[in-house]
Amino acid sequence: MLESTLEKMAEKILSLDEASLTGLLEKYKARMENFDTSQEWEKAVIVFFIINSVRAKNHIFNEKILDLKKKQEKPATKPSKKKKPDLRLVK
Image (cartoon, rainbow, N blue to C red; front, side, top):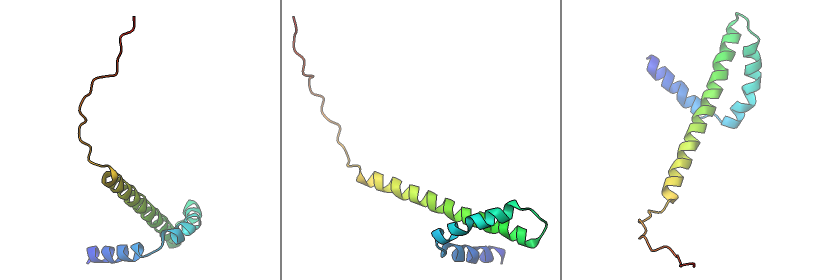
């Protein structure tokens, strides 16, 4: 039950736009920094970290995609044959 609830929450969170979430970050950060013992403060802390978790996930995802693209772009290089250096005798 708990696991399925968390997975449903994750699905809903993943459907949200990061840019829109980032726009709310300062609001929840300010609320979180203004501590009190209310349930609203607790919710603000959770929302703040949810927004940051989406941003962190997207950052990691983008880095991994770039790494994959870089690996695919590198052509398989064959070891080059050693050729004699261009040297000449100087007297």
